[in-house]
Image (cartoon, rainbow over all chains, first blue to last red; front, side):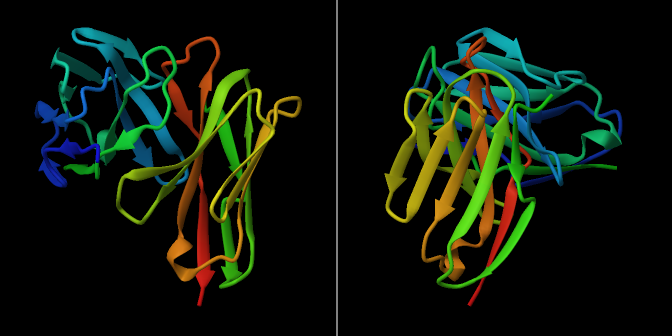
Length: 114
Length: 112
């Protein structure tokens, strides 16, 4: 089975800190995604990547950046964490290049920014 | 802006009843997918229907797609308490099909 692993299940950070959320997948998938999930808003796409060193902005990229130096790893970076970035962060990957189908999700990281 | 919107936001039924959730979207799509999320966990893929398909079945799941109305429905037959979860539709817009957009979801409670 495909495994998508997010490095932390729960994370507590202070306002202004630089935060790294890591995601690793073990099935050689080309596409990887970062979403945030908030009550009543569903999942909102932050960034996605379809290849190493390639990235595309999603719907809410402000305040975030990403890094994909290796195919299996996709990192989300909060340059200067703010309280409105408190959320559940979900990483996903899929094998279809040119047509994203059947995303595999990690278990999520619940980030609290105090 | 969100591509998909589910309806209703919340649904509560008795075990054994059927549950129907609807999804509407805004732009042309390549495919539409349904996912399930148990509380506090990641999402799990349930079923995918392509834009040239009208109906698809998988076990107790039935999905329909009406591209003229830009809408889809997910039917869960003979529901079980274990079906209690949130259900999301997801679409990939034809203009950017690597980008998968989710709706806000329907919260389903199945009462034993």
